Amino acid sequence: MPEQMTARPYVLLSAATSVDGYLDDTSADRLLLSNADDFDRVDEVRASVDAILIGATTMRKDNPRLLVNSEERRAKRIAEGRSEYPLKVTVTASGNLDAALKFWHHGGQKLVFTVDDAADKVKATLGDLADVVSVGADLDWGLVLDELGRRGIGRLMVEGGGTIHTQLMSQNLADEVHLAIAPLLVGEAAAPRFLGTADYPGGSAARMRLLEARTIGDVVLLRYAPKERS
Image (cartoon, rainbow, N blue to C red):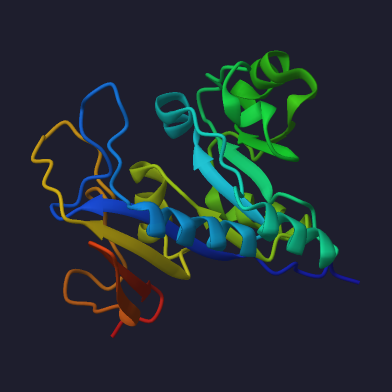
C-alpha cells in the first residue's frame, strides 16, 4: 500500500511592525513594538498552538525564551492532555547555534531543522538539548512542514524573522497572518522588515482576505488569510 500522507500543520505567521513595516531598529536593544495587552494576546496564541518556530538569526539577535508566560494557560494545556509548553522549533542552514542561549534552557522539547552539511555541527553543539533533523542538501520548507505533521503538530506559530516570513509567504505556505502595527516609525534602511522582496503568489494586485481588524490599546491587529487571494 502507498504511504499515507500526513497533514501539514496550519501555519500562522505572527509579527509586530512599525507603521513603516519594520520588525526592529538597528540599535543593540530590541525595539518593543507591542504594548502589554498585545503581548498578552501573543501569549494566548502561543498557548493555543502545538509548536512555535523562529529562525536562528532571530534567536541569536533577540535571545528569547519563547514561552507561554501565563501559569493559568499552561495549566489549561496540561488539563487538556497537552504538554505544558508548545514544541520550540528553529531552522538553520549554517548550523551556527549557541548552546548557551535561553531558547534551549526554558520550556519543553526543542527541535532543530538543518541541512546535511550542517547536521553534525548542530548535533555536536547542542548535544541532548534538542532533536536535530536534516531535510537534505537545502532547507526545504515543504519537508519541514511534512516532518512537523508527522510529529503531530496541528498548529504552528511562526514568530520570525523576516526572511522566514518572506519564504513562507512567497511559497504560499502561510495559512494565516497576525500583524500587530505599532504607532512607531523606524525609517532605517538597514533595519529588518516583516517581508522582503519576493515573487508573491498572484502578484501585487492579489488581495488577501481580511479576517479581523481590531485595536489593542495603541496597536492595531490585522488578521489575514494569505491563501485566499482574489
